[in-house]
Length: 383
Image 1 (cartoon, one colour):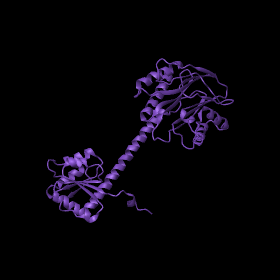
Image 2 (tube, one colour):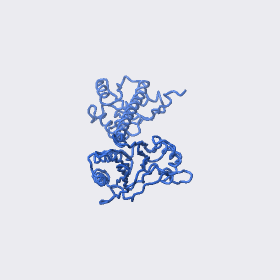
Image 3 (cartoon, helix red, strand yellow):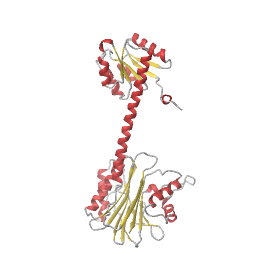
Image 4 (tube, one colour):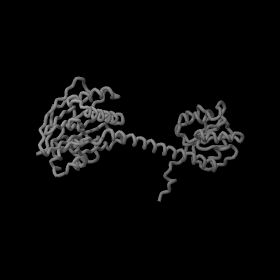
């Protein structure tokens, strides 16, 4: 069994900030008695210490440096490196400064004349370990905050479809790219408007990161608001483009999108630079309206509609390009839409509720491992 102490990175580099040559010599002798492998660097002035701070495991700081009042030296060191492990050295007459220094961010204080080698090295090691523990807690807290923010963004990108009162059943899937720890800008939604028409959208903001994810969430929420407000179907993509151009932080960002409007037994399909949806009746086939530029590329773009007659047992599959960009490592060929259609033929017996996850599983098998890009899938099925 490995002892926990063996896994810790040893303390090797000590920076002593001390203007008194005699005191500096004494500290060096005390450290050498206990651990001759320690590397001690002496800085006689605060500017010299600041210049040598990087790389030091622990700093021993004399609080009585010339020209430095009270705790100003400590504040200066921590201002350069807030995570520095600092032990302060005080004289017999100003021990109270030591407690003030600990309150100001030092890890410990030592009184000159009351320190031997064992006490000094113990104080140094404890200071370093405490600082490492504090740093770990800080990093954990930062990771928790990032995870919480990612959760909020995910809820914005991946809502619960609002289809009460309709005969359409939605099945969805989302997975972020395994090479990143952040969400991308893939989003989807499905809503029944006040007239009973079912609208659906799936989209992908170019780029990856929290800004793109936030923009995707904004577009998704805005699209839902437009639908619920009764905006005409042909105006939804132009309004989203106007919003995208206004809100994006980088003028190079664009968004691909596929929209559906299902009214009775007819679906209206529009594509803005997005992969075409798949009709899952009879033999799986692509629905291919004229493909126009993504949102945010050029002004005054029109996205023509493709009307599609829906059979009684219809189902439509919408997806983002992360699914079809799976690449066979042996042949270096992409899955693309042809491969997706082959998978759908092979999975015809898979229930609709399980099909989106199964398609991702099959794509990962084709890819030889986790997919590189985010994947969003929305499967709509007529009851």
